[in-house]
Image 1: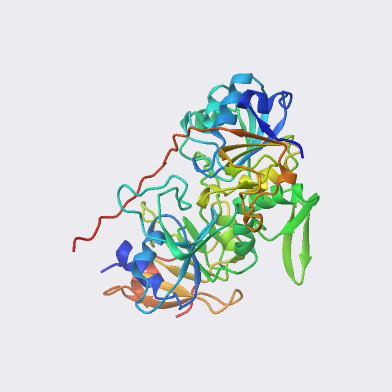
Image 2: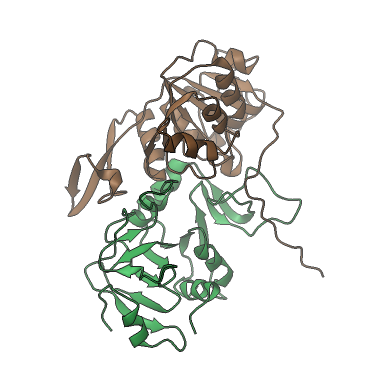
Length: 211
Length: 236
């Protein structure tokens, strides 16, 4: 049985370590915050200028001056800190953030990622994605294994415009988890979702990986 | 000490606007956006603007107002979703967009204001963003040269200011307001409240008055929330 969106988020959350500073993208990555393992404290960064994102506010306590990068209302924690956008991306670009979890349209076997534009469609922009993949220490991509038309998303080379070149460390899909030791190593199939076989993964993946 | 307080937004922008100018704006989404100054720029009828701002507002909110009135020629932004009029003008070829990664945009403003005309970053290397730009290898890693931005005018939304131009911001409404302010040849800040000089803690000033030429009170504000998300209260 494939992993659900929540399963994928929970699996990504197992990569968190106590004391980590973490940036979570929009969509499935946001769900990772619901699965932070017990006994571990992580500080979530919001690229619009906050460390220490708290939970959604109680109804009636929403504050228009307190939002996350997805423009949702949030709350603060006793150890939260605010700063401007230049400082926010200085800590991202400067390698101070330990881990980021992002969605993607395509990941290539060499670690390239494409997640910001589809040629011919309206371009909304890359936001902070290019800065995050360039600067954060560990990049985890969470995405469906195949696109809606059934075509693989973990492929030999990206066909869509890149967000970053040779940056991805781990890929978690609804079927499997791939990881590589460093940016010159090939991805390795590390885990399969329950009931999913390596044969099925091989059939649905065009990227080269080792087992 | 000069008094930088202006009596109203029209006076605060008087003599600073001209066709074809480059304006840097603070704000992220609808948070910390200089609404009153944008409305005043719209009313002035100034045209052919290039605007450096992380976002372009949403339909008829924030910079969306200047898009609707066709006063914008070009946007320098990182994310422009949630805006149908923007999409229409962009697809019709009426509006030019220079997509810039969010951190690169913030640093381009900061650098421009800090007297740094260009800087190398690894953000965007190997992507469309780096096309046509010089690259350099430092310590075995490739970086792309990005230009600092110096704007003719910076428009900023602050929380509190004193008459000398010291400004503080509130929570995540600080965002691009500080780098935008820094890169302006002139900087006008609208605030919720002007407080007596000496009441802001000198150790807690977010934007020192040296960057600010004019201050105007924009209150009252009806602050908009783009996505209202809440949690249920646990019952005891």
